[in-house]
Length: 161
Image (cartoon, rainbow, N blue to C red):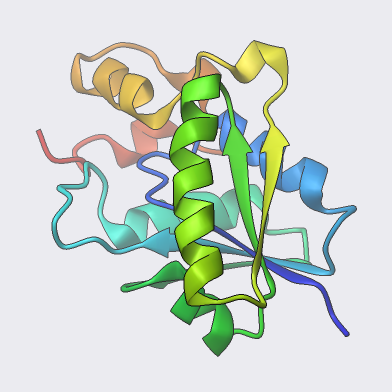
């Protein structure tokens, strides 16, 4: 049976921390679906289309990775895509507590889907999308925090201020 994992998130924007988790997990799974959540209750900086385009650029040469989007429960998306694993990255103990609670609820909703956690490498611990977004909003250079193939200048004016 093919091991398919879903890596869900808003990815607003996709960071080198996200990239690191996905690349390191390629040895664990046959396919990884990077699923951009479309949350109507959350105001995104970049549009769903721009976020998917950025991620697709990062993994354009990796056939085991697919970029998609979804609304609703992650476990329902997993079931529709025959994914038995939810991949999540952990930076801090606070991340662990938050992700643990979500994983336990997901397990109650779908007993056949496992949550898999990977720790970020130490140099990515301080990087998160909120901080990167704040740098971009303030006109700073956030290029060191996003994958090198993402040219943030190309997306200037795409984000909501």
